[in-house]
Length: 170
Picture 1 (spheres, rainbow, N blue to C red):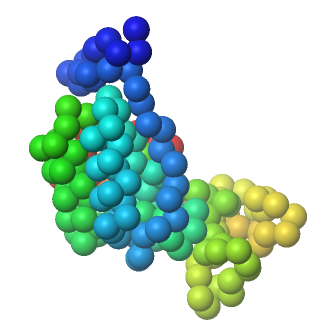
Picture 2 (cartoon, rainbow, N blue to C red):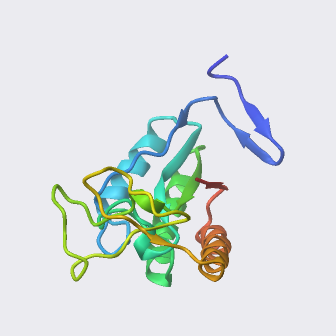
């Protein structure tokens, strides 16, 4: 059964092996690099039916860490296009992307607390910290929430432009 095809609307997978999104913490300024190319390309070469790229920030301050991928600008789209093109041209695998905003969990954490001058302020719909040792997030206004929703829309369009076969909203 795991090796049988499955179809979801217009998306047909060659098998039922799906690689869940796993953060790699290896991007620079949200841009996927050679590490990501090899990581996702090798999974495609290995026969995975569907690869879902790690939680990818729709805005810089929505990433889990400063090493997470993003898709808020053209440089990131171009880098993802190379990965998607390789997967499509060298395997039968499909590739999707998980769009995310980490909310109160977003931070520039890299093993230590980093000052706001070096990082960014976390945001959330309420003033509740992710953990007692974390900062209380900025409470989003209605307008800021609307802007964030638009960022998800924009990121979905960029994902389609990058060639992804599906978009997952986290």
